[in-house]
Image 1 (spheres, rainbow, N blue to C red):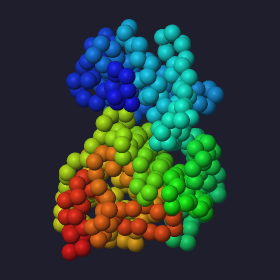
Image 2 (spheres, one colour):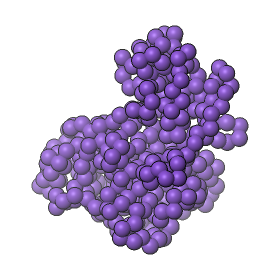
Image 3 (cartoon, rainbow, N blue to C red):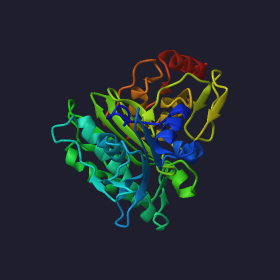
Image 4 (tube, helix red, strand yellow):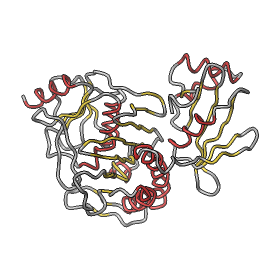
Amino acid sequence: MTGTGTMRVAASGDDLHAAARLLGVAPAALAPELLDPGARLLVGDDAAAHLRRRWTDEGTTEAVVVHRSTHVTDRAALLAVASAWGCATVRDAGTGRVLEVPPPAADAPLTARFAHLAALAATRVEVAVALARDTGRDHRKDDGSWSIAADDAAHDAAVEVLRPLGVPVLSEERPDPSVRGDQPWIVLDPLDGTGNFRAGLPPWAFSAALVHDGEPVAGLVVDLSSGRRWAGGRDAGAQRDGAPASVREGSTVVAPSGRVVRVPATAWRVRVTGCTAVDLCLVADGSAGAWHDLDRSGTHVHDVAGGLAVLVGAGGVALTPEGGPLRLTPDTETLIRFVAAASETGARDLIAAVGS
């Protein structure tokens, strides 16, 4: 979204005041929107727009332009926000005019086509998990974790949307397809944080990544409980709710849930969310300094690939316990262990602290 056309997603107090001036409203009227994942403020040198994401009566989503300055001619920025939200249309609340959100061209880079369809898949998953909730078809797996009807519904909804890419799709919910060594592949966790979802305790998330040659090159993580979303990749930077995101050194460590959480000497505090995809995005956007699973059996590729793509785009690193770069393989059964941090130095310090 940022860098598209002449308007950018507002991300600061200065942006807020500029948007308010251009829209002719009090800053206090827009201030809550700056923090709401379901809203976007777009601002440029001489134009601004206020958008909200909403569901239509037909069950699709659209980006509604609630307010706009008279000089908004930048359709590209409006359409980019809508695409990243997984919306089918942009509607001007004042005129009623509707713009269809076009997909990327068939010859566009695979990463761009993936980003567009992954956002649409997340929208479909929102509906699927809500409709499947409380159907009574929940059971515990052998490892004690929950398998619920919403997991299957989320998988089916996401795979249907991503199928036109013609790329193998791996998912927690199905056996792994065959992937050639030089072939890109997609890995999904259609509903990460299943236990949280079942308990009604945020967050729970949709996570998807495009992987090539062992590296997550594009990813999307959407906290379905709040609407907050992170996107990023190797050549695309990283964004949180449409604004640029970057790593930041810090003393807060996020860790996977478990009966015991070890506090490394480098950490002042530890947070446990119960949703690994979101954990990694908190490192990517600077909310936390690092994440690790070195004190337990490991994590599956579908839990982490989407967040790792965002982390790479944000300038972070992921290292194995031996200190080497993490490479992903198309195998949802094998457990992997690693550290994610804002810098290589921070990652190595955490490896040493956990191992001591």
